[in-house]
Image (cartoon, rainbow, N blue to C red):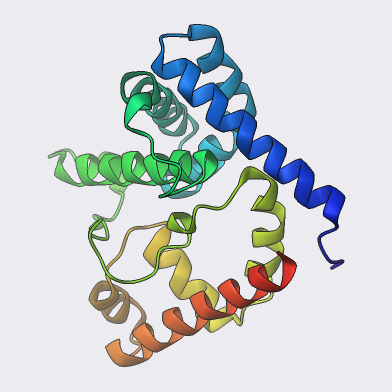
Length: 199
């Protein structure tokens, strides 16, 4: 994995600036800007929603929900909190986990899906999507993620893509609660260090 060059960094900054300009234009009522933002980021939003929800139709609805929310709330976006890409991914994760909650509440037990509880959005535990990662960093993150030990990666999958709490992960896997917390914390620290090196 090569180091990020000045050219790559410049492209990333340019892309982030372009995203911010689009969000400002959306806040001013530009449907064209919304379409352009959709073209730039719908794939990432869909990919995360699909991983959480599995069904294509559910993931597609999340994509529509996210960009409808962007249209309504673009004026609330604050770039000091997250990049535009990071903001969109956080919206996608929230929407997808809301759909998991709704699926659990259905009396017909749709598709026999095991009920899962969403990780509270106010949790103090580190959230990989909440690190405000730019779209250009997605490939780097995926690469870093695959280098994690399987016993850490599998727990992250349960926490962030199935929305299980630490105690639910412990119950499902038989891993002691303290070990679950330690492994997830170690995995997040490893990812952060790897991304810092690349930056």
